[in-house]
Length: 243
Image (cartoon, rainbow, N blue to C red):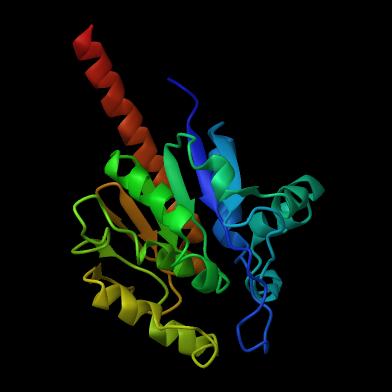
């Protein structure tokens, strides 16, 4: 089996438009998938719309939100350096990946939805039958992706993402540029959410995997690895049948 390659896409935005609060990447939404990938010896690339520095939302570094795995990576200088020197989407647009994973954080609400390069990478990935995964606000990166038939990728897809009630709990309703839950529904998706806000929820619809919030990070990583293992097993069966 060839080396499994994962592209993790993260934000470059470090501030809400109002200037009232800093924002950025939500740390655990990268650390869990990164850890899971490393355990399986996958090749991981971290990229952002512009490349370079990836700001971290200070809220995700607080005692309550920074879990053991996130703390481990945050204390690791080589990982911090990786986040300071992300590749740009332009640099990776022609590379092949088994998974494209959109990490969240409120910063993504500003630079993901209208990024043409991101839309192209996601659209090509999805239409080639490969895995697209997105968590929390990173799901906003799927909003404007159109397929070659002209339909939105998320039309009629079962998915999840950070909901409006959770936005209220986070105290960010007045800060965010749009209501993610409402916009996902308006774009024709079959939106799902956990019964209890701020609890883990992961939804799989074919080769699209989405997670609701930061508390889904751990399960999301498990599900992505599980679905990859299934794909690898299937391709081995096909290979064996052809020989």
